[in-house]
Image 1 (spheres, helix red, strand yellow):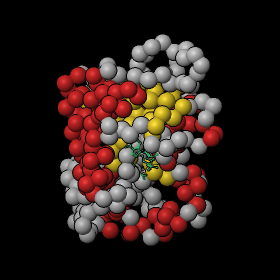
Image 2 (cartoon, protein in one colour):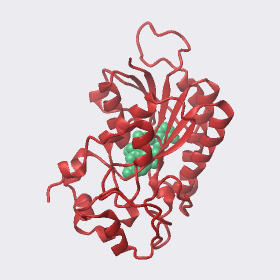
Image 3 (tube, rainbow, N blue to C red):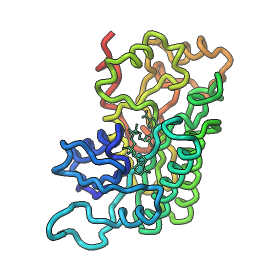
Length: 303
Ligand SMILES: NC(=O)c1ccc[n+]([C@@H]2O[C@H](COP(=O)([O-])OP(=O)(O)OC[C@H]3O[C@@H](n4cnc5c(N)ncnc54)[C@H](O)[C@@H]3O)[C@@H](O)[C@H]2O)c1
């Protein structure tokens, strides 16, 4: 049966694909964002303009009707089944560092606090593989070990990723305090369908030595919708962090381990990797959420 789901940041790149996927599964969605969704969504999804860094607005919005009708026809105070929190500055240097930190940490805190206190049972949060500290390091930094699983220390030095780590920590504490399911998705570089034909993906394939910063991994925007849907449906896991990436390394190396040994000869391995397993591994998500990708990059990339 379809669920009532609030998506934050639904007007953004990831959000639009996630909402499209959720609608296709029969869910009802309310979008909270600073800007409206494109017209194609207007029949089915209402956008409420909310600054999530403002706690009062978050409490009101999480307990809102989903649809603007005359008169209102939904029961008053019907809580959503889940909140999927994607909103925020999605990298460094969109805003000044202190604004990125203030807005992203407060938005995440406000969503977690309000959802827990309003008794919303499922919270799904966008984090990032930048938390592993390589993407926005000052200069070249190596991953501590491969495969990069959720046990690897997340010790970034940049503001955007530090704010993500703070959000994860708040989530862990509130999940414990309220006995809630809060699932954190450490998302890789999000690739929209049209981007497989663009320069970045070509460089992934043809100049792979340049792409430690994306961990030779990616997250298909449509598969991210599937990951969110699986997370909505899977109950009882408490606080969890999942690497939310697709299955395979983003180049044609026959062996991921062989490739990594060539480009980073001093990196340790904590287990044997699958032949073409992405260096940031989604194994936990497959095992606990039953994820299987629908969009391997090879299906869309044109050499
Ligand atoms: N794009 C990537 O490759 C990538 C990779 C890893 C993680 N992420 C994370 O995934 C999430 C979505 O990323 P995206 O690429 O779709 O970003 P995006 O910039 O396309 O969309 C973010 C949305 O959040 C909204 N927003 C920002 N601040 C807000 C606030 N205070 N209140 C309400 N809405 C606000 C924006 O208006 C925008 O619509 C982000 O949390 C980002 O950090 C993105």
